[in-house]
Amino acid sequence: MMITAVKSLADRLVSSPRRLWAVAFAILFALSASWSIATPIGASPDEHAHLIRAAAVARGQVEGREVMVPHLVGGIEGQFAETGVELPRIYQELKDVNSCYVFKSETPASCAPRLIDRPGEALVTTAAGRYHPAYYFAVGWPSLLVPGAKGFYLMRLMSALICSALVASAVVSAAEWRRRSFTLLGTVTAATPMALFLFGMVNPSGPEIAAGILVWSAGLPMLMNPDPQLLNRRLARLGIGALVLISIRPLGMIWFAGALFFALLLSQKGAVREVLRRKVTWLWGGLGAASAVAALAWSSSHPDNSIINTPSDLTPLAAARKTFDFGLLYMKQMIGYFGWLDAEAPAATLLVWCGVVLALAMFALCYARFRDALAIVGVMVGIVVIPITAQAMQARQLGMIWQGRYLLPFAVGLPILCAAICHERLPWGGFAWRRLLVISGFSLSLVNAAAFLWALRRNTVGSTGPLLINPAHWSPPGTWMLWLGVYTLAALALGLFAAVSDNRDRPLPQSAGTAGGDASQDPPRLAGAHAEA
Image 1 (cartoon, rainbow, N blue to C red):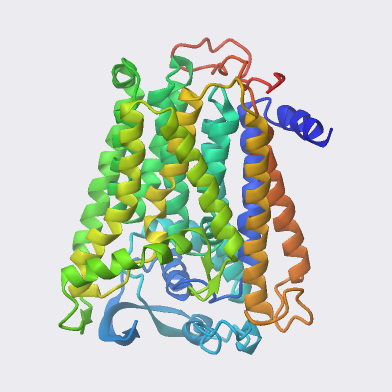
Image 2 (cartoon, one colour):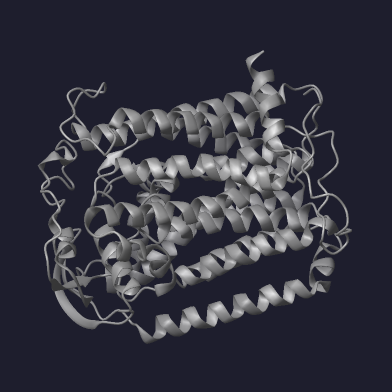
């Protein structure tokens, strides 16, 4: 009865693309905004550098003078090339506000001094001064309206808003498949707790991952499950995702090329020709090319002049071997390793998330055709080989710097790709698919909430503190119980929403006002789900 009621509610909520986008956006924003508010300022990777960069760009300081700053990273000493900018004095305190608890997981964030907005400005340096300014301008402008620590939270919420909008568009793309339960589950699985955490921080990794999810979710149905009436819409989503991905950093071009390659590998006969016939394809292609040229021009004109004293025995081969050995660690970091990699998610989160991804992959491989299997294996190989190659090439200049989150814009494609192949190949008779999907969605929801609780415990009482947080030495605005409740409800809504939204016996939605459709028709609607599984 409960599942039937939830399914009926889901059908009403997704009765149109706009309503579906709004519902998905609300859920995703609740999740990412919970991370924004419930995480202490300075308790996410390099956020002080990104906050400074965002505030500087918003004030017109896109450039700055180079300052060589001594650093010790991973036991390797060096002179890091940072960018000096003039900002309110509170930004000067950001670098050291977390020094009493960062990398000390048993120490709660209550030891950190309070950030106070003092009058005047000071020279502040940031290691993010060479990064493309587009993202920083998009999230930095709230600091002009609200000074001090409240401005930091507003910048986080702006980043959460942007990422939630991108992934909500990916959810709509997933719902346009005939059997949307599988494809929605693939998109939800791609949004790992680590991805949601980064969505809520001021960090370019957040929109980079969100754009990766959108590119995979829009590109695969466009070529695997083509519909002329949906083509312009899918091209627009793919184009927006590509523009964001390419504008974040040069690696985005590789992530986009990888997603496009596997979509082309699985394309139906005639789908590419139909795409190339559309004028809008060339428009988005031109915008993407211009964005790529601008990104490369910015990157080449802002080189990293840091001097790292890497050990003589850190050869490319040695770096490759170490990177291969760290494979499990990178997997953990892609699913849930919060703070400054000092707040690990519980083992259940890792096991369940990997279990759902592997289940999708195994089902897809069982019924895969040759090209399907080639694509699945190709993405898996890429997830292993890309970090090894990148680290081997960079080790002598930068040391062992790779983290799992760097690969997420590409790795999110694995569950999305496998779910798409399951949609196309799996027979739906003789197996309790609905039960499998409900169990998967519900399990992901629970372990997602558990990961949030584990991160809260680390910041409020320390990683060795009581699981039932009492008393809380540090508490976010509104208390930790409020945000745990909001996050848990949103996680359950997202997981169950994906699991019970099945429209396998209904036609694909019609799109009004696009090529191949009649603009005088009623607004586009997504088919309801009234068939029995």
